[in-house]
Length: 261
Image (cartoon, rainbow, N blue to C red):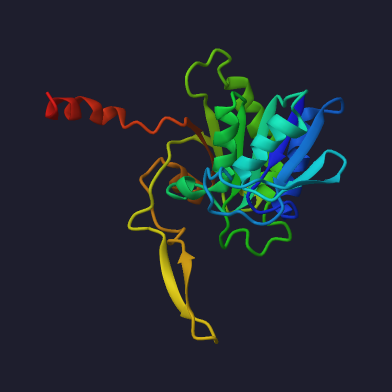
């Protein structure tokens, strides 16, 4: 198996090393793992692509490339340049430092990479490690992802339909903020929304007198609807959420048609 890995925390991020180990486990001794990751951190860029300016790419080592662009750019570079003659069988994105559950999913560059891979017709999985009091002080805060990641990926691949049409499925995996030995299991869960949690901005004045705005995330411990991804993560479970690029609110189509009848 040939696997392409990327992330949004940058090519030197510790979570990418965890993902590399997971990918090598999946690929096996006869497989290949290729890395095309952002040269610098790209957290929060979502599915952004560098449509109006070129992306510089440089080889950093054997099967290892850094691109000055977004995670989605890295997937495009991997599929259409680095591996253009031998396309990957699977794209893995992560392991993100911090969760991409609930509303975080919409902002995530980690998710954006998996989404782009799915749009390219490739199986894709995004993996993220929730941070919290249960794992912040561990020698390896990514322990839950490192221990359980390969098994989760294998099970997803075994269930991924082979006859997909239209927008292809991709998968969002979030590991709970606890030691690996305390993980209670893996659940398939829908994307949730944390109650009264939103991104915002906080103004600061620089010594020069200029005003800057820092983007702030919401409370990651806020409750989400029972059974959804963030809720299950905080309860000690790995969550797996199947996703598609289709943003249509199918439940609203009928009533909207009535309004225009």
